[in-house]
Length: 236
Image: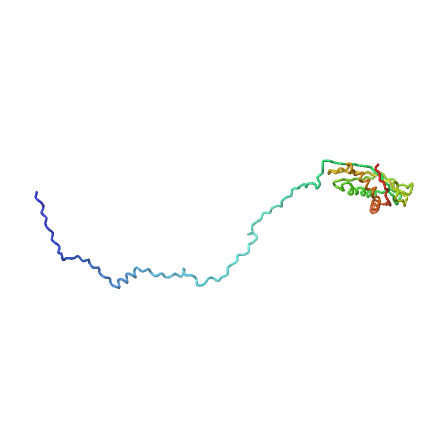
């Protein structure tokens, strides 16, 4: 097989050079036009966006006073009812009840020949009951309930110059009123009115016999027709 024949290409001229093509230089007017065409358009502010020249000078308006209908409605609420509460007693009573009663006899020198009327009898009974406060434990209502009851009266003349049992006070009128009465002492608060040493009928007797002058003066102060009191009040 025969070898291919290579035909040589034309040799380049060593002195030939490849110089780049030169672009044309734009003119100054073309440059200016190009710059102007790319510059942003001029924006003039609109009158709607510009602030007002001066703030408003009008005074603020005041809303009218609200009417009653605008206030919140309050539904009427009835006042609370008070349930009755039973307060405890000031002095609770004791389960132990003590009671004692005795019968007494007393001579009184009086100014009139008569017995005590109904009003005077009531005053006399109240006086006898009042002495409970100064005997025993010095307690009266409600701790010790005292009840005096006149059951009989007799008026007469003295057989001598002195009241029976009283040799210190001479009679001036000669008239004597003998009173028979009962004294009852009851306690619902644990005061033992019949206890030995604190027996109220005995304490009552001792008090009247030791204070005859004061007893007589007390009767005169409440207008009982009494001059003096017999020295010995006796238990019957």
